[in-house]
Length: 189
Ligand SMILES: Nc1nc2c(ncn2[C@@H]2O[C@H](COP(=O)(O)OP(=O)(O)OP(=O)(O)O)[C@@H](O)[C@H]2O)c(=O)[nH]1
Ligand SMILES: [Mg+2]
Image (cartoon, rainbow, N blue to C red; front, top):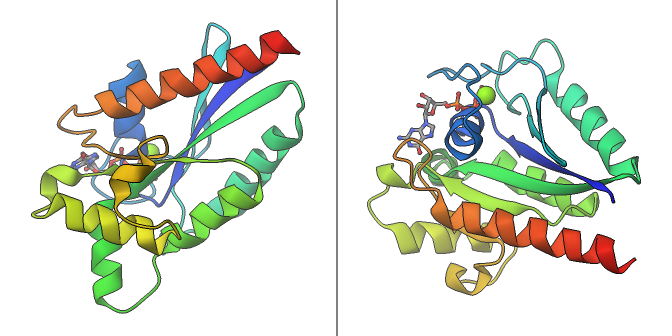
């Protein structure tokens, strides 16, 4: 049976390491500044591995983390013994702030990149504890990612979460569902 690899990808400071700690209990360094995770951190569970990637798109990316991340992911995708579940972690507040400046959030590019690699990512919209209007923000985010709002029709793909407030149950359910589907596919081959 193929091994399952859950990869957490997103902009720097989106809350990837906080989320992994909440979901699996692995305690990597977490910080208020972007660029805290400096190398892919891979955690091995039974029949399952979890990788926490360095965040993309922060200004002092002098060490080329973006290349490191893309090379590592592309290597994983090519490995036919692995099945990948991608979790794209988005900082909802920062996404909206970028739109306010009439700029295109890097998350749009990250999402498209993952689709191009045939990873159908789960989009975990994080830091919702900081939002004033949840539904409106979620609808804006999904529509910028190329999905038709309302976001609630994408519940198999998009989930609002707060890693810090430990509101991650919907994501946990989605992950379990994907793992289950993959196990079924492997068995039927
Ligand atoms: N308000 C709020 N803050 C959060 C949430 N999740 C994470 N944070 C904060 O966001 C900051 C960045 O968290 P990290 O988990 O280090 O983010 P990261 O995506 O791993 O960052 P890099 O490793 O730099 O890419 C920390 O100050 C966290 O406490 C959340 O749901 N709500
Ligand atoms: Mg991190």
